Length: 322
Image (cartoon, rainbow, N blue to C red; front, side):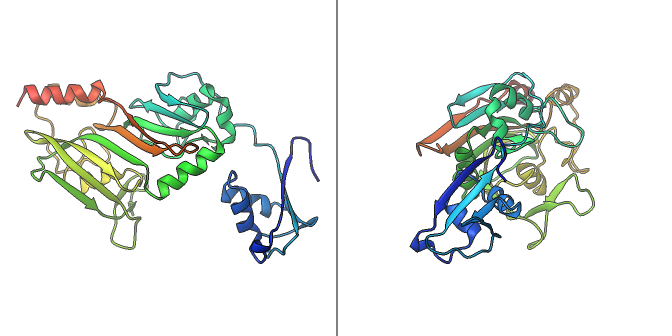
């Protein structure tokens, strides 16, 4: 039964597609709908072949007419909040924002308001129909304490394109970080799988081969400041807490990162430095550069965000005090 607000998409099965599975044919024919969304519609009985509801594995025949009934998107569970947003770029398809440290990207345990997702819905209400209901248009995230650039999809077409680009690693992401320890080599690569910590589900950790997801981080030393190192990190993969976990794994946790700072990391002997770290709203990590292909035009876009004052103050203090 078609209800008010439903819309329908349909198509004829061509000779070349005869024998294809229904779900795969739909994914190739209607790329504006995600594979997950299409599978859910088929499972709900919303896909009919010549008027008969079929399952995802049904093999199509030439000349059959496929009709999919799509209900309207659910009402957003988020209440838009007109919070301050630093918009770096915006058009009909994507939105690039510069997130401040201290802002959570989307609702989760213990945080039901005041997130970037709430602010995005207030800025662009059409995002409610893109991606997940609680993560409107969000294709990747930054930790609460990490500042910097983040791209958001404003259309389903853009959402699918950005997801593909992240999967194929064509999105470039560069970060600036201040870490404990003096790294002598000028550059390096950390390649170690990452997974949930076996005893602390809040934390991630480097896991033995076969027990985590592949993760690769490249780094380049920018400046050595006594017992600290200022560096640039480039992500080849995008695992949860990747830079924080990888740098901690080589004995160089991020300054201000209480989650991954090792017990062996010496305490700050400088009260002024300790105060600056406490005021910095999180680890000394900033997403400074973001590169991607525009989802519609294909043009390569590069965005940059200057180092925030919270990290500039740390660097200035270390430079001035040897």
